Length: 315
Image (cartoon, rainbow, N blue to C red; front, side):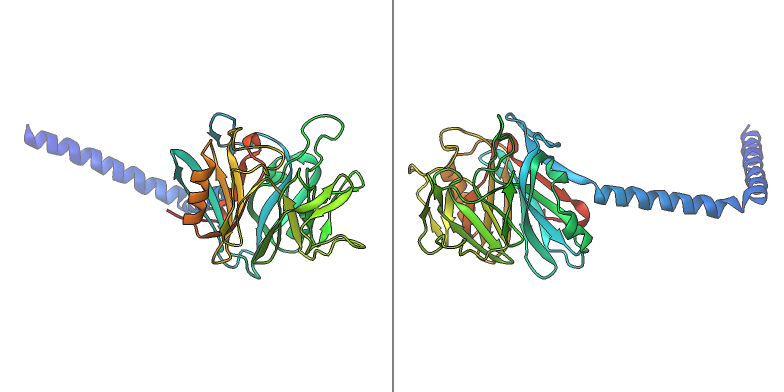
């Protein structure tokens, strides 16, 4: 019986080997092509995966892997791709998930305000001229507030400055609005400043160092207004006062977008996908060695996009 089983096994093996040999004789020339096709398919898959945007937003209830609202302004990151200077990390704060894009500004990597008069998805709110100049879009977050209804739908609230010039909405400058757009972040390269000034009922109000005489005495490449500040020049601000901007997030709990910079002059693009008490947010920012931090538009506008190819995941 044992000998019989051995005979059967040898016969099967011999038959398989014979057929394999015959197949190789007949189709050997196709094998390299098949291997090349498999390798090419794997390369295409990896490239598509690396270049596909990662998208996050808040649906008023939870974090989602899609963009929930079209917006008009973005704080975007561009890179020439030669140096890895953009990092993504995630964690939880008071049980709420947060995501951070940490950016090291340099001659290879920079932040830029991008703007469209017509609201569009964050992933499409990019600058064609910058990309045509040889830079790649690495990611970004939503920017400032904008009108959601009526004839002025899409109009920014406060300042939108990019490439050393004020942008316009239907022919009117998007400049700071004191008491409405609240604080404005100005940034060029690795330099960031937070200022509270602007037009109020036809009068330039606020910061006397940057006045309005024959044009703004502001030379920052980028500027964008947000809500209230958490930290300015390393000093924690009173977040219990009456100056809170267009929406009082302290009583109207929403997801948070925060534009910040740390002691190392790295930019922090922060999204907190849920409601966290502002005092806890302030402590969180201090633990990140933040020296300037401004709360931007939030709620459904809370969004982040990044491209895996240009962003290093931090575990």
